[in-house]
Length: 298
Image (cartoon, rainbow, N blue to C red; front, side, top):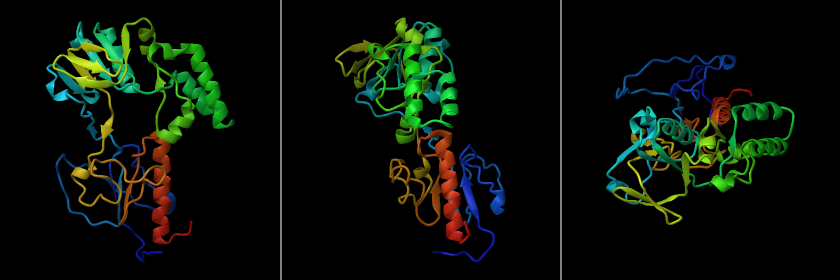
């Protein structure tokens, strides 16, 4: 086991979001921070480098067949401001996560002809259900809480499968842990889907100049496409030696829960798509590993 003789170690944390909270007073870590202008680079020697930028670096737009031929407007959800500019327009939202559902709801409120792509089963809940579930998890097994919340959701929303939104077999809290998939917190989109003010469509097979073809054989015209397809890690664009922790496309080299550690003192926190709980888990694991390398008594 490596043992550092010096009492103070240089730990550089890249990022200022919830992943970057390594001010560990118990271990007398002295964390210093400063703002760095965009594009500014600095040569800095350190013992450990922790990437805490998560994956919220650059909007990800998948390379759908024919996307380059589309004549309408294409944006990522990170550039979406308001549905006001899309009034009376035919808009397709690709991505049925919380961002996609919220954008579809907003578009519909402004009078656009809105459609949303739902490719995979998703859980739809209310904010109150999530809160109740989190409280119950302190006292009950996750399987029981999953069953209870799933039943509450079905009572609230009914059978959403007939509207093109099937429910996963795995429960809402279990699937968050195993796959990092968060349930959809409904803000009103489900009501509009039931009223057919928002149309649910399956996966895309091809994009043409003015239309989009879907896996069920349907083809519909659109004026704009909004990709609510998440973000991608761009650390590989500036990190010289990332091969021990990231693949070339920025995805993690190893799957959860062994994703957080690379070689030569390189770590990452918040890349597992498991929300604040995953970030906390990464942070604790990284701190413990640094303490072990340093020779601290845990």
